[in-house]
Length: 355
Ligand SMILES: Nc1ncnc2c1ncn2[C@@H]1O[C@H](COP(=O)(O)OP(=O)(O)OP(=O)(O)O)[C@@H](O)[C@H]1O
Image (cartoon, rainbow, N blue to C red; front, side, top):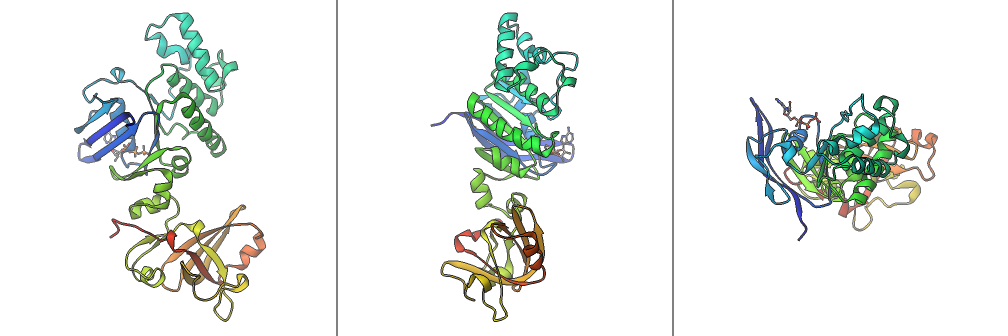
């Protein structure tokens, strides 16, 4: 069986009257890239701080590599934390910043410099050793913080929104780099973010937090394709829920169903009520679900178009279509028009825990 780098059992944290974390059970395997995703205030940072030892649990335990470390101080745990603001020392050079962790561990100077150089190479900052943090860009500073974390070779790296201060383009680039780096070094990463795309892009597995609790744990595909609760369906990806009467009408079953926007085909309806240009018949193709409605809004996104459709059966669905042959003029013509939506019935995913 795979080793468990981290095991949290019944973890709870109360601050005064706020229960920040409730009953969190979690296992992270060796070498895994594990994300904790959730809105602001959902308790993910507090869980991270309890793993690091900066916060003592009100109840429950933290195990690292099979050892109960709940009572140990941060420096007695084989973990390293990278914070959003990087916390670099401004008066030290990049090299000194990276080597600092080795200096306090009394590693001899020659070793220190060699390992710092290796760590800087792994984040592709070889030529920057003598600069100071103020002479670096945001992305470079972020990489220094990573090199500083990697140099001590911790078993576990804890990252709290490390890309939060970067602009979108750089953030997307760093997401890929960080994931590649993690694969190369094989260290277990626990990554806190409120950005669903980031979590989906980088994680092997992830936990979705709300209100101090884990709503669902799984691979990005499991979370995205089969959200376990309405909260997860809404927070990860676009909320597209069919509930109540509209579910009964459209899906033909009672319950709550989620369907992802990109699974839905949008067909313009002709005056005789059939599918129009694509020649789709009024009844859904076998194995498909169909619904009619009126386009309330269309948004041209460049590579794709987003349709917001008010269903005749009640409720609203969002559909996203790739712009294979569609121009922005075609898109505008959809506004207010009648459409048929169709998708394969395997994309109707029943959402449990719905009220
Ligand atoms: N030291 C503290 N004292 C009192 N309340 C706290 C403390 N730290 C966190 N909290 C509260 O605990 C709850 C969870 O906070 P936490 O920082 O873990 O959430 P988060 O999901 O990481 O949010 P964010 O993304 O905004 O950092 C919040 O209601 C917060 O106000």
